[in-house]
Length: 108
Image (tube, rainbow, N blue to C red; front, side, top):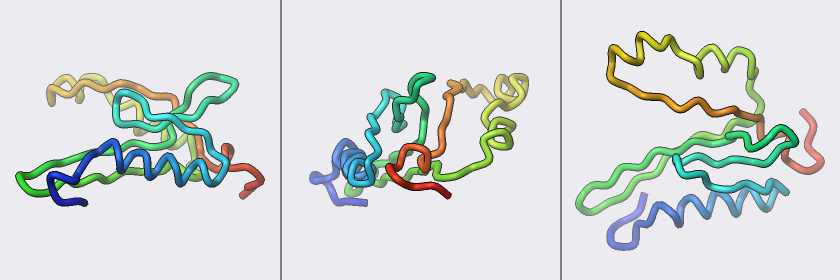
């Protein structure tokens, strides 16, 4: 959270990217408020963010996928298309990865 006019969502994104970089994780921001890492199988999402602005404040919250059961997570990332259509929601599926695999020298 930051007051305006200082609030800038790119600054908070860069803070997270710098923290990941300090752990040896080379991540990039994507166009959908996600952070991705490069893997041999292509880019994989490791973080998602949401932003809200009011007249005097800006808010940023996000997730970091550290060590999830990706097969269970897939059940939630691939919801029933009929339910999405009924709510007027469009979804972009992203392939995901656990951050622990990208952290140099870390093994859970």
